[in-house]
Image (cartoon, rainbow, N blue to C red; front, side, top):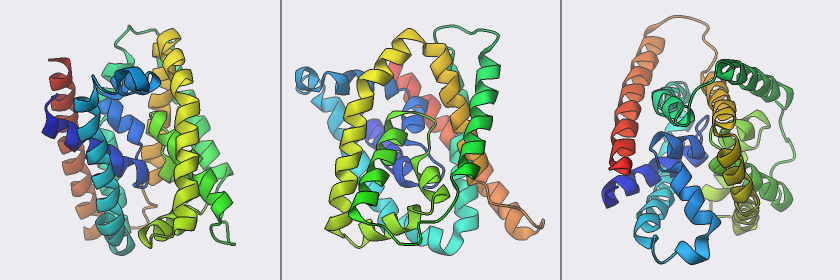
Amino acid sequence: MACMNLFAAGFLIGVGSVAPGVSGGSMAIAFGIYEKMVEILTDFRKKLRSELHYLLPLVMGSVVGIGVFLLGLNFLFDRYEFFMRFLFAGVMLGTFPSVYSAATACGYKGYYPLIFIAAMLISLFGYQAIGGNFGGGITPFIAGICGIIIGIGTIIPGISASAVLMAIGLYKPLLTAIAEFKLAIIIPTALGFVIAVASLLKAVKWLFDMYHGEISFVLFGLLGSSVAAIVPRIDVIDLSLLIAIALSIIAAIASYLFGKSAAQKSRD
């Protein structure tokens, strides 16, 4: 996979890690690089030198993606949240074919759709059950919990950390604190993220090795619930809604084509 493609994939993974309703892990699967990332990171010391040319553009792209979101897309979400939600819903929808292909790479079984539906419904119920607001604001301890949630959403495809944070009322406070460069919040968030990633990598690799299809369709269901959760409530059909739907369709097509191209180049 060419350096610029890896940088672009890393950029979208970074954006996906912090953008509402999007999953960085799902982006990695859509672009055909998830399993290789997990393989490298689970044996990081041995593979650092040999895979540095692969990891460096990915990491750089992710950092730039997070920075661009914090400085630019966050501004857009503040003013055009309705349209941006549809835009990112389209991005996620566009990854569905690639995620399905990855999920069935080792074969297909008749009960996989049931796993998909069950995971989606349980996840949607969970979003409603944990909905609420931490009115006291964000503290270093809560920031550490947020970091763990972000780490889980990055490593486990289909789980949108931002959607979970939005559901419990911590997404905007955390984003604001990071944008304002509050180290008392940034440091525990980063620590929580590292702890989650280090704890989950080997477990995720083992699950994929043992139950690739079943786990993939669970994650596919979680991805579906993330799309359903991000779409705002529609009260009236007007010009704004039509523009938002058009943005969603354009984003879905672009996401599908990029994912297809990136996955193909990853296999070549």
